Image (tube, rainbow, N blue to C red):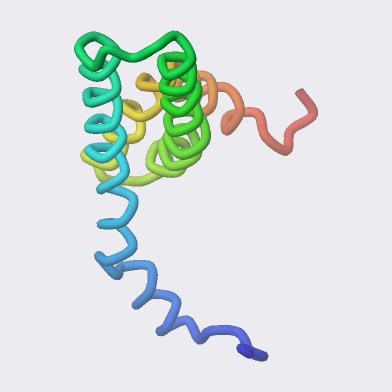
Length: 114
């Protein structure tokens, strides 16, 4: 159990560790691959109506739960690649407008009287 806070040096080290960036960057190609395979399967897989419904629900959960959360976090990063992947994930969930509203609306007015 960690009973103490991290030192500033440890915080800087963890903040710049590439292993954390890599995990979030791998989500975008993973979700795009899932969507591509799902689209192929829906067209050529010979699925029944029930299987097709399950596929649609599964793809919605993948893009909606994982894609929106990771996309939101990536949109806050400084790197252009990370921001682009964040926007790609949000667009995959048909939620691309969130990037504009969130950064230009919410973060502009958060903790203000407006």
